Length: 329
Image (cartoon, rainbow, N blue to C red; front, top):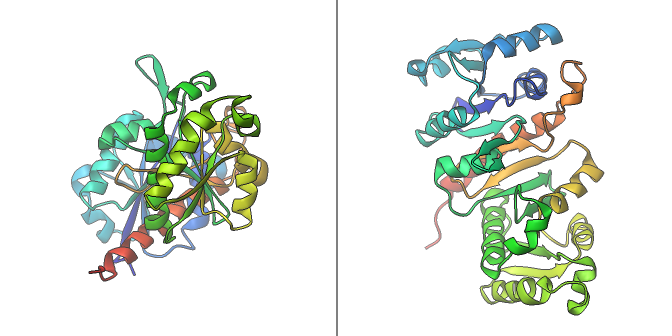
């Protein structure tokens, strides 16, 4: 078992989205169930208090300064802490959380939904910001729902018209390698079997409906198989999803964001978790967005936030178990 306390950092996301609401609801449900876990919340504490009053929920959180970390986690029984005088700056909050994880003060990071931020001419999200902060060169998002679906989109937040031009054998091979490594380390799947999605209808029909399958995707699969990675494809994404639900595949690499996300939305609604791969820390988030149309109505469903927090705790436990296992000679 992990020594107490296990501390999970949580960002509230956009103050004007449903992030604060689903976080308060999620913590109120989880706190009676989880043992030896404390939560360090990043964001405006006044927003958190306002949401609690509106929902008639009390988390009994304690405000603390940076110099009180980590002693406060041992000194106080309350499971919820908020950073005092924290800003709403997403990048600053993420940087602080990453620093605490690297110092082994915090075990994992969970982020509530936030809008994309401008970085030059691009709009980027938490994943790209975390890659910048951690210095990760190869990173990705894994969408996952319990043990039923695990899909990694190869490209993140780019226009659909740019997807084809972003593909290369090197990028595909690197992405499948990344997913394979994390399926082994995070899910204890030995020699995972991975499916690679096609880009074009009917997998390109031998080049008549697109050439990416012949010029990029099939050669990528051949190279991966030579490396000993169990990869099949390219196949239509719906075929791969069905095969994964049957237990025939351990993971799927999709080629763009919605190709990966649509199956989750259709099958599970707002259930499911986004796990960031390749950044050297454990980070999870719900699969839904800020849901601006229902902000303040008190009807936001917290299950996605619950799933993300529980997934982070389980990943920490998995990491701890693997660290204790004897190394193979």
